Length: 205
Image (cartoon, helix red, strand yellow):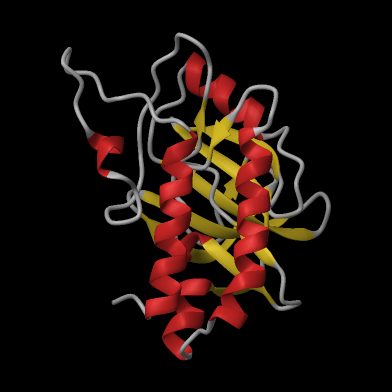
């Protein structure tokens, strides 16, 4: 995979991580001569998913890395995003015990990002707020790094539901009477936000 070029432009340097069935790579942009994080999505790209991703590209809040390009190649879909250098809050917690003084400024920035998504003209749910998805940059700033699980609140459109056990509320996976998964709303992110703070302040206990 290393040295493979995506879209005749993004050369894969190395694998950065894996989440669920998705892979994230560090890629070098041979046109702009800069590095990006590129996430390979696990699901096929149909018309509805394409609409979701195009809307995610309009997210303009400094808490979120920008999605600058979408590459479709050999049946796979790749999101090209700002590369964030730093440490996840989970790794930060594993290195030291965190206090309320540490966590409160981060909480304000996380809440700012989630509120921004909820107030977009077509609301978006983050759907996977957890310490693994929150980066503390080398400059001490917070970034919510994975919009790949986001749920776009289109009217009358059923979408896939994702999330992480313990951080996602139980009803996120609850089956409705007709067998369909219940439609999430803003409370889904609020619950995950609370669980994230609880996890950080208790050391994951």
